[in-house]
Image 1 (cartoon, rainbow, N blue to C red):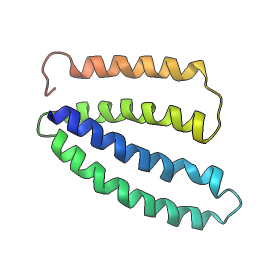
Image 2 (tube, rainbow, N blue to C red):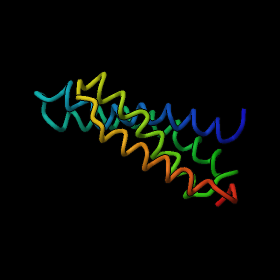
Image 3 (cartoon, rainbow, N blue to C red):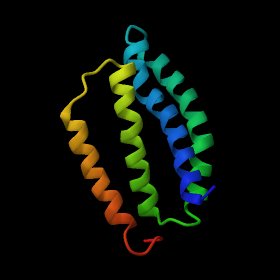
Length: 117
């Protein structure tokens, strides 16, 4: 498996954990004390870091820091939109499309030309 694909898969997995750590408590723990949400979120984030740190180390062998960051942002949006719509029951907005197009532009510009930035 290529470095970019391996990195992308690992970042997608880590982003799923982090999205739940950051936002699921708004739905599932909204009636509980905030400190409980913090502790649970930290627990989830621990597993996210177990995947994210190796993903960035692997990716950094062939990608620049900027490329890693833009790749992460593209993955973040691709994880966040389904999470927002299907899990949090938020309406699908056209703004998600515009944001995705902007991020696609960022991906294009950061990866064009020299692959390592």
